[in-house]
Length: 606
Image (cartoon, rainbow, N blue to C red):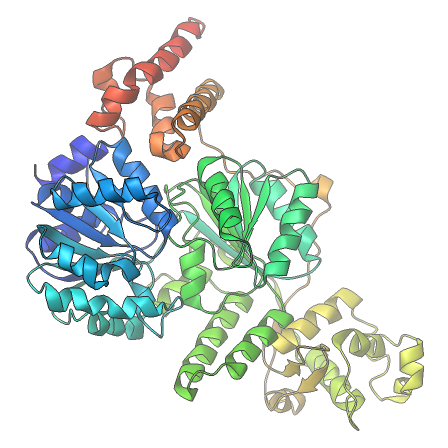
C-alpha cells in the first residue's frame, strides 16, 4: 500500500496534516531526517506509516516504557503487528517477541536507548531486515536540551554499524543549539531538517502571579475544567503531594507522580491517568514525556519550569486531540530565586550556566509580559507570529497597567534603609513599614523612625505584596532562598535615580466564587446530540475496561463527537468517520451503530 492508502485504511484519516507528508516522503526515499513537530502534530505517524509500507521491521528508540506500551496498545487496536522489548516483560513474552522479530513478523519494534546499543542487540539487528530507525524524543541527546539523557549519546553506533538504514529523529522542542547537537551526536549531518510550525492554536495560554495559590488553582479548575483530565506541574515532590491532597479534599480524583515514589506506585498512577477519565495528575517534571492521552484538557504549572523549551513541551500535553485546552502558569518570586540558585549551585561549566540563566530570564519575561503570550513563545522558536492572538489571557482580556515608578522607588528605598548593618528583612516587614504599622519587630529595630515609614498608606496591602514580588521578578531586588530576606541589586539604582520607568499590571481581585461564570469548554452540540455523545463515551469506557486499554485507543473524543453529530446508520457511513480504519470498522461498527440507531429511533418525530 502507498502511505496515503495506509493512512485511509489503517488509521481511518482522509488527509495528512502539517509536515507528515514531507517527513514520510523523506523516509520512503531512504533519507535521514530530523523532524520538529509540535506535540499532537502526528509525529508517530511519520515513522509508523513508512514502517507499514516498507519491507522489514522499523526499530523505534523510545525513552520510556509507558510510551512504548501506549504506542503498542494503539497499534494493536489498528491490527498492526507491533511489540516492545523492556525490562518489565516476563521471560516468556521476551522470548516470543524476540522470535517474532527475528522471523520478520513485526512491522514495528520499540526498544529503549540502552537496549538498542548493547552488543547482543546490535548482533541481532545485523541478522534481521530493518526498514528504518526512528529516534523519538530526540532532544534528549543534547546537553543543551531540557531533558538530557546520557544513554542517548550512544545512539550514533546505529549509524556507524548500519549506514545504509535511514534514521528519522523526532522531537517537539529543540532550539537551534539543540538541533545542531542532535545532528552531530546521531551522526546524521546529511539529514533533511523539517520544521513544522510550533503554534498550538487550540491551547489558550495564561499566567498569573501567585496569590493564595490553592484557591487560584481551585477557581481555575472549577470554572473551566471541573470534570476533565489535567496535569499540574510542581517544582518539588512535596508540593506535588500537597496539591494532590488538597484537590482530593475538594472531591477531585487527583493522583501524584514523582521520582520519589516506588516504581510500582508510579506505574499504577500513570495507568489510572491514562486509562480513566476525569483524572488530575499532580507531578514533577518526571511525569509526562510520551504520555499519549489525547483528552488532557488543561496543564497547570504551579511553579516556573526551568526553560521555555520545558514549558512548551509540558504545556503541549494538553489538547493533543486538537480540541480547546488551557495552559495556565502560576509563578512567584520564590520560584525564580530557587531556579537561579539551582543554576548557580550546579557543577555545570560557566558556558552552560550562562545559557540556562538566559533561558530562565526569557521565561520570566514571558510570565510577567502584558503582551501576547503566543507571540513571545513563537518568536523564541524563531517563528514569525502576529503581535496578538485570540487565545491567550493578555489578548482576550488586555491587562490594565499603570506607571508604578514612584511606588517601586518607595519600596526599593525602604529596602535600602531597613536592610543594613548586617540585618535583612522580608517583603512582609518592608510592607508593614510602608503602611506605617505598629508591631514588635518595627519597634525593636526602630523602623518607625525611617523616612519611608508610612509613606505607602495610599496603596492597599495586597498591592504592596504584588509589587514586592514583581521587584524580585524584574530583578530590582534579590531574595534569599532560605529566609526570603531582600537585598537590592545593581538594577535597582536606575529606578531609584529616576532613570528607568516601571509599568506594572493593576492588582485586580478575582470575583467571589458565586459571581464566577462557568466557562467549561464543552462540545458545541445540540442537547440531544450531546446526550448521545455522553452515551457513546460510556460505551467506549466499558469496552476499554473490558480490554484493559485506555478509552482513547478505542476511539478519540473527536471521533465520538463526529458520530454524535453525523449519526451514521450503516457500516459504510460509519467508515467515513475520522479515526475509523478497516480493523476498527470490523471490530466496533456493530456495537456503536446499535447505540447510535437506538438514539435515532428514540428521538421524537417532528
